[in-house]
Image (cartoon, rainbow over all chains, first blue to last red; front, side):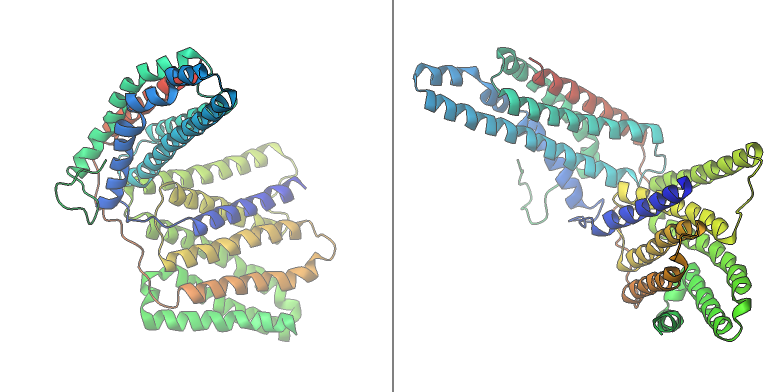
Length: 195
Length: 252
């Protein structure tokens, strides 16, 4: 009976993989094309210049806003403010998550071309991407449960780390720059810089 | 009546596909697959004739021809590997490693069983042996498809059809053979209808997807990339640091 279950499961796993493979969305642009490189470059730029920018992080987690609203003495306004700020913070994390996922997709479609692909390095990188995505999920849960102003230190640390994050986010750009130097999306006039 | 129709519909479609493949030059592009189909067409015609005119000889004819089909089936899997991963040297390396690993695991398991179990025999029945060999094919194909999915390798219409038809056939075969090996009551009657019916579905998939040539989408980036290790190290360091800092944001 164990063999019956084992072989049936084996067949079902193959059917599942086939289904996933045949119904996966086709990539918008051919792998390795200027457009796919641009999408990855754009994701990194957005992370670096917009989502993890100190101003953005400081504004989302700023306690001066909540302190100001508290001085109004109107609980309904404070409640509305907190729920709106939570929504914004959750949106912020989900956008970071989406950009990281976009980078991960780019990496997967890109690394297959490397003849000297290292299995351990590939495994380690994938583990890195997945753990980063997990951190984003944990952050979403925390923000959802405790709100963005749960502790004073969160905002301070967020601002403090934002600079480091920008610097770190720049590292992978260097490898993209070597392939995509001066990349522009199709249809953009020359010299246009997309943010 | 239904069984008869199913049994003859297969060879008709197979021959139509082969004739079309020769006319359109598909035979040269997918030589092992169409050789497999030609062999299956020949064997199906032979088996059907034996079944209707000399039923006692059917079982020996079936099992003696089935094992050559199995061997050519491994060739089809290698052709899928060649056609999908040629332009992706890194992915091809990983797939080859997986194929070797799966076979090594199977041989290690069989060797262990042969040495330690006094009741072990290489397939107590023909169907059990075929089930084991098909199981190995399923594992190898699943590994290759996992690599194709992981590296987001695009597939053209022909390859999608070839893979989905062959994969469906293998998966259904291994499930029905596993059930068949246990001689479940009443299953033999269902087997005679279900097996040709599923193969007919596979043939229809191949007919719709391999009627004419559709090239595989070409990646715009061709050739080898250098510096993977440097890239991987810098990307890994960046990811690790971003993770650490995001973690700090989350902690009170």
